[in-house]
Amino acid sequence: MTTTPRTTRRDFLRASAGLGLGTMVHPSPGLRPTLPRGDKKRLLVLGGTRFLGPRIVRSALDAGWDVTLFNRGKSNPTLFPDLETLIGDRNVSHDALKAGRWDAAVDTSGYIPHHVLEACEILKDRCEHYVFISTLSVYAESEGLLDESSPVGQVEPEKMDEFQVIADIRKYGMRYYGPLKALCEQAAESAMPGRVSNVRPGLIVGP
Image (cartoon, rainbow, N blue to C red):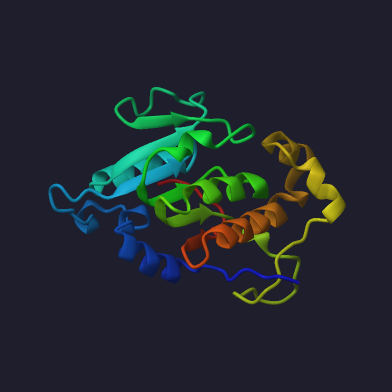
């Protein structure tokens, strides 16, 4: 059984500090780093206009990053009118990502393994680091305490063909949500080995 190491909050703080993304977990104005003029870091956000996305975008902008969005342009399309938005539907194609270079990418909208794999294959030569927003639900049922070595949930091979679009996850409810996220983590790491941070939060509420 393949397992994926868990990124703890402390690990993420350490990794994000190296990328200059510390404001994503420490939004206090007093802790925001100031980048030198003319030395803007470039961030790609896959999603960016719903739920967690807007907070990540605003924190990055406050920290001085140059932010590009990739989404369908359907959810809150006027939220960030001044930002470059690459239009694409993950159920169809990631081709819009073939132009551009970024220091880091944050994937807030990855649920299907082959979607994440396709994005990472396109970005691997033009993006330094990939941050995947996963979930604590990746872990398999266990009666003991969870740590980085705990097994993740599995998806039966015969079921994988059914998970071709995001809507299918909602049809099956939470049964496969976590295991599919675990496979997304593995897909990202396979395409960009050593350059992926998998963040496994519990409930995400408030700022």
